[in-house]
Length: 570
Image 1 (cartoon, helix red, strand yellow):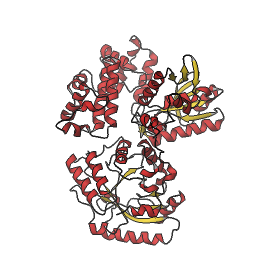
Image 2: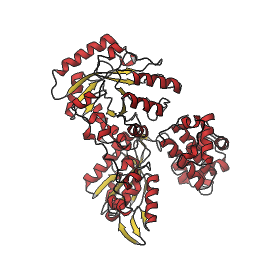
Image 3: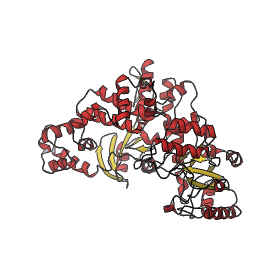
C-alpha cells in the first residue's frame, strides 16, 4: 500500500462525505490528510510496520486519521469508506467530474430520479426528466450531455508538458496582440506540478473586452464556457479548461500570488497576515480598508516579512520556514546543465545516429553526453548483447574523432533483471564509461524482491546511476513498490547517483523523493532519455521537477564541467 494509494482513499472518502452533505470541516480534514500522506518521503506502510509506530507524530494526522491509515495499510481500505461506498453506485463519483454538477445536485439526481449510472444520467437528460427537478433547468440538461461527452478529458489531469505548451501559446498570443499590457500563467502550471487539471492566466489590460475576444478566437480554444466583465472561462481542444482573469495593475502581484497557490501555502501566508493585523486577498494587502501592497508578488511577501518564494516551492513543505531563516535555495536553472547522460540511437530503438545525436546535443549547448542504448533484455527495442555492444562502443569512439566541441561517453542502459542480476556480465560493464541501471520489467514484483534488485544494482561496482528508479508512467502505470528509506541509504552509502528522467511521462524521481535524496547528500542527474534529436527539448521538465524538490546547481552532478563529472564515475 503506497502513500499515493492511501491518499486516493482519503480523497475518495472526502468526495463521498460531500455527497452525504457532511460538515465541510470534516471534508476538508480528509483532503488535507490526503495531501499530507502523499507528500511524505517515508512510506506509511513502513511506519506502520514498526512495533512502536505512532502516526500521530505526523503533523496534521490525529488519532482518528492515524487509525484509518493503519487499517488501510493492513486491509486495503477502512470501514467508514466501505460503508460510504455502499451507499452510492460506482458511477456516482464520476458524475462529480461533470461541469456544473456539484455534490448537492448529484445527490438530488440519485435520490429523486434513482440515477445510478452514467447511462441513466444520459437517458434522463435526453428525456428532459432532469429539468423537472427543483434547482435544475433545460440548460442544465444540455450541460450534462456535453459534460458526458467530455468526461474522459474534462477534469482529467494532463502532463505538465501538454498544459504548459497550450498555456504558453495563449499567453504569447495575448502579449503579441497588443490587447494586454502583460499576461502570465498562474496555478499549478506555474508551480510546475507534473500534471495539471486546468489552467489560469492573469492579465493586465485597459480593455478586458478586447483581451477576451482575442482569447475566444485562439485556434486552441474549442468553446467559450462563461464570460463576465473581467473573467472568461474557455475549453481548449485538448479538454483542459482555462480561466483568463483581467486584473488591475495595482492588484496584479496579489492576484498572481493568490491564483498561483498552492492552497496550503496560501493559508499560511494569510495566517501570517492576520497575525500582523493585515488582510491578503487577490486584490491586494490591506490594513483595514487601506491597500498597502499588491502590485508585485515581492510586495505581498514583504508585507508578511518574507522574501519572494519561487512558485515551484509553494507547497507548504517547509519553504516558509526556510524563507524566515533566509535559507531559501537558489534553484537550479536549465542553463546550468552541461551534460546529458541518457539517450538512445539507431543501434537500438532510437531514430538518430550517434553523430546526429552528438551534433544535436552540441547545438543545444551541451558540453558532454553519454550514449546509453538498451541492453539485450529489452528485446522489443533491439537491445544489445555483449558483442554488439562492444561494436557499438567502437562506433562511438570513431564519432568522437569526428565531432569536436563535445565529449561523448560510451554508456549502457542496463536492465536489472527480475532475479536481481544484471543483464550484462561485470566484465562487459567494466568496459563502459558510464552505466545506468534500470527497472523495465517485473515492476509489480513484491517490495522485497524490488528492493533486492535495486540494492544489487547499487552494490555493483560498475553501476554509476539508477535511472528512472520507480519505472512509473504518469497516469498510465504505477511505479514499483520501493522501500525508499532503505533505497536512498544504500545509494548514499555506495555513492550511486539517482536520475530525474525529464521525459514528461516519467519525471522519475518525483519531487518528494528527489528532495529526500538531496537531504542524504545523494547526487542527482537530470537526463532527457532522448530517442531522437528533438528529445533533448524535454530537459526543462526535468529541471522543473528538480526545482520543486528544492535542488540547486550543486545538487545536480551533470552541472559539473566534464572532467569534474568524470571523476564521479566508477
